[in-house]
Amino acid sequence: MDLALEEARAAAGRGEVPVGAVVSRGGEVIAAAGNWTRELNDPTAHAEMLAIRAACAALGVERLTGCDLHVTLEPCPMCAAAIANARIGRLYYGASDPKSGGVEQGPRIFSHPQCHHVPEIYAGIGERAAAELLTTFFADRR
Image 1 (cartoon, rainbow, N blue to C red):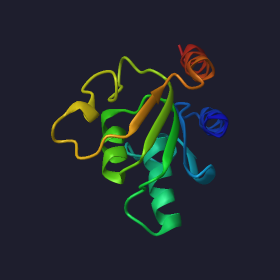
Image 2: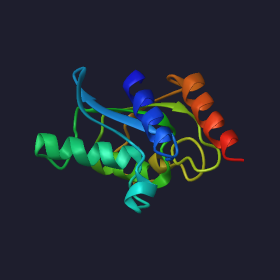
Image 3: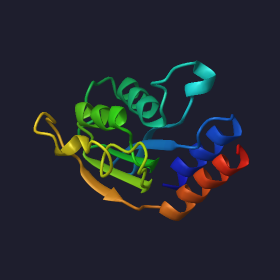
Image 4: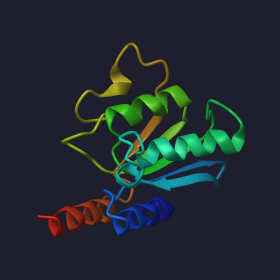
């Protein structure tokens, strides 16, 4: 989660919402990314999406079976669906997102019968640091 937090801090430094994500397998980092939605003018350029894309490219596969995803914020519904489609084995996330979350908040993507894969989910990992980063980021903009 430390590397995901570094990616989130880098995103904040670029003026992006501070979210970071890391894909690993067997303890080896395969890909890491922060949000790039504003700079790329791409609403799908969430940290999770970018890390998943990079990991698939690095491994030359379309599914990340046996991989873990660490992300600083509860994934939104779009990212949760991508996690399911990528067949990520374990999802670790920091802060909950009552406004836009898609895992344990909001639509709870993994609870739908149409969801073909459900990762193991571990919430609250590095929650305090992730929440403080988000709170500070948005407080500075208000």
